[in-house]
Image (cartoon, rainbow, N blue to C red):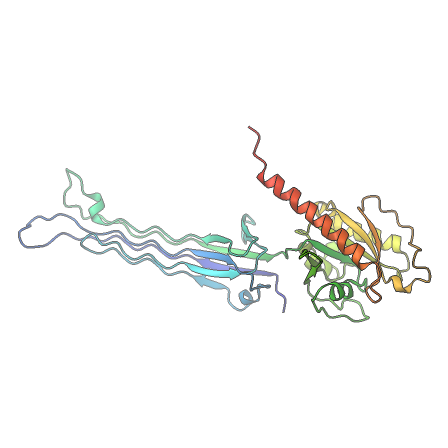
Length: 340
């Protein structure tokens, strides 16, 4: 089962209370206060783990609580801190406050860490309150409560290229041919019920990742069909491949519908660079006859057949080059010094 959204309730550990204690030993009649501080409560930390691909585990359990800190003790002994609770999530997880919608952070790369709920501070013991005028304080502090919050986890797949098309556009067949992924392929609409990822391997050890998104129909941005549920997964792709089958009644109208749905869902998504890919070229009597489709914003047009493998290599080389250039531009922008 593919689960790409979950809401969990997190309770970080409460800090331990400070101690009230006085030094008692032979020869020291007035040893003074020696109550130690309480230990801090444990944090709840989200960790990106590349062994995970869904948020399925969080559909079985919703409540998570870190351990509290121990109380302070005499002889100026600080209580032991509570252990942090680490929760593993797949890379590409966005973390938001479920009540306010505020973005807490993102975990994009394996090993990324994010403190989702911070443990409470330990209380001070009476040794901390000793002064020249109050040498035997009986004052101490309780530990602070750990942070409590409802957190929404949303998974957005990380891929270089996103395949976008209506049901039966040939996306899954294409993915199964050019990668080692094995999505379900059949001749009826909505065969693909969950997003699929595949790695394309080219010569000279060049690779890039393709995401196959379930079919998008008219009205997907309003929640119709499966497209709206999974359109978020193409938000992080570097380029899109809009796939139009050559057996469509009106290829130009189908291409325009895809553009409208992307724009309606997210103008930023619609602004991503895209190419136009005509699929099922083996159905054409004349393989050189490309339908007339007005696509001035597309950076390229390709005609492929996954069955006969016509045009696949040229398309893959172009997609790799485009994803590489976009990645390099992103890295250059990230390292560019800020203007004073």
